[in-house]
Amino acid sequence: MSTTRPFSPGDRGPEPGAGGASGVPGGDPPEAPAASRLPRRLAFDGESGVVPLARDFTRQALYAWGWLPAETADQRAAAEDVLLVVSELVTNACLHAGGPSELRIGCDNKVLRIEVSDRGTGSPAPRTPHRAGRPGGHGMFIVQRLCLDWGVVRAPGASGKTVWAELGAPA
Figure 1 (spheres, one colour):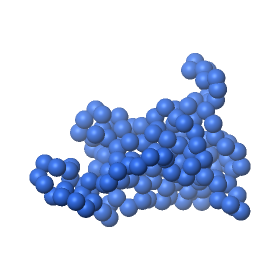
Figure 2 (tube, one colour):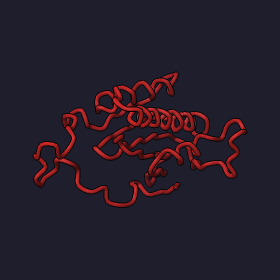
Figure 3 (cartoon, one colour):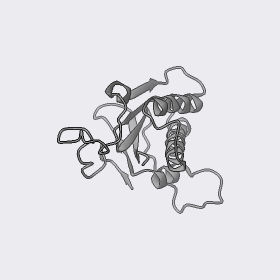
Figure 4 (cartoon, helix red, strand yellow):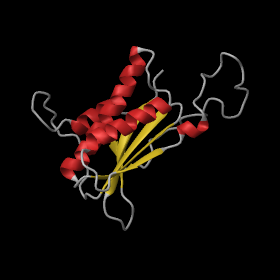
């Protein structure tokens, strides 16, 4: 669902280990150290080859956050989905908005959030009707299918926008 909300709807609930009696063995899965869970930012000013750069940056974050190396096929698929969504959002910024200015990614135990800022004025939207056999125009359709939610945020009085997407953490 495309939306202009800055955050996805609903309550994600309390984070495991955040208050309460969560120190019970076998309760919560081990968490990555708090410092490794900090949001990460990559500026694209003057960079070339931004799509592979964004994928490499994201892959490094996934390793730091414990998404990689994946122990199961589901975990591997979740990491590949994140890399695909990053590729699609950065590519869209390149094709339709004069290029991305910044990539931000953040992760908690339940959701990974990707944000790509650009200076463009348009709004991304899945091409409708979607024609699977037709080349091009699949980027936002892919994002819509893989993500829990996505949207666009515009800062008042500033040019450009931020396209964000959220994916569920692997089980």
